[in-house]
Image (spheres, rainbow, N blue to C red):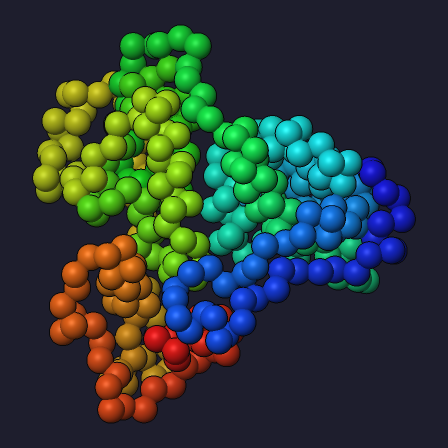
Length: 301
């Protein structure tokens, strides 16, 4: 525990949003960079609890108090090693995770919780900036082959770990680009897609073979995969929206998010999407439910 009185000295701070006057001109990420010293102060708020419930709050079991302490002590290299021990892609979770770890933070019982998510994101981005993230090739080759079907976060993590274990890994994706819902279900203002491409370059250097535009079960027969590979790992995502019995769901003009987001992400990637494929709101009155970043971005869009 770097600073025993940190949680009493420093108030919770979170990143500032870019001015709306700037954001209306692009679809880029919303938040500005977080000052390093401010982040170290935030890490100092971690109390190194006897029972750190943030461990249970985190679906990955991240060793949160350890890397909070290391950030406070300015030991960034050790911090990224501790973070990568449980998380292949902190740059994804640091941007997108709803942070149940913060909801579980003991400090949150009678104060504001530690800004765990921001510490996580800053650790990984600092590591990339310093050149500490590089391909990790296996020490030995097993001779075994694995097909991973689905290139969302589960498929990417499985493929990377299997390749590092020495297996020959091929990653299949039905869409035209690798990334699954990370790429086509997440708007750029939450995570710009260079963050995915940066990791894909690392994974390619580690030996992972990518096969986009290949729908297993249609383009490739599953029986052929069974014959070709020693193991098949199924990590398919759920692009089918849930049609819940919500009052008003039957009304005209109520659309699923997945009817819009993939098209917008394709357009953001530079693909030509015919206007008729989009839901046109020209000349119509539109209700945006939610006044946060997503609602504002849809209004200005």
